[in-house]
Amino acid sequence: MRKMVWLLFVLVVGVLGCESKTTSPEEGKQTAAATVDEAKDTSANKEEAKEKPSDSNKVEVAKEGSKFDPPVAIDTLPDGAFYCNMGKSHYARMEKGDNKCPLCGMALEHKGSAVKEDHGDHEGHEH
Image: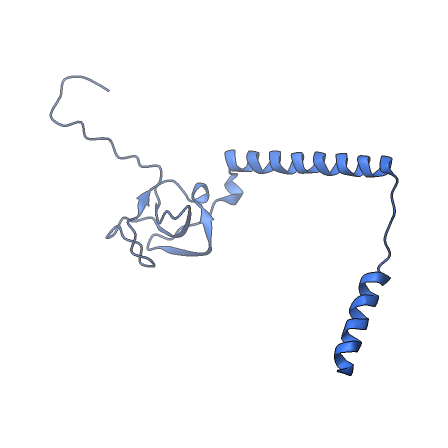
């Protein structure tokens, strides 16, 4: 029982003993405005990063396969990679192989496929 009372006392003193800073309404408005501006800058930077992945963010994928833990964004994979698409990729390789993810069994997708589409038997004109 004494330990419980002591623990409660320590918690109360810790909460009440924290120094609280009082600000005027004007200072509060300035702080809030600065916080909103910082949030806008941060979200704009995130959007820019999503649109333009830099080459330094690219990951390397081994010919025989690479596991990613934590999973990586699809746009960080090199063109030509076969990858497991679960929103992000936890596995990718540069060769098609059996076209199945060895970790979860899902079909692999091909990034930046340079394979020409098959338009059937119609020759004599260009696309």
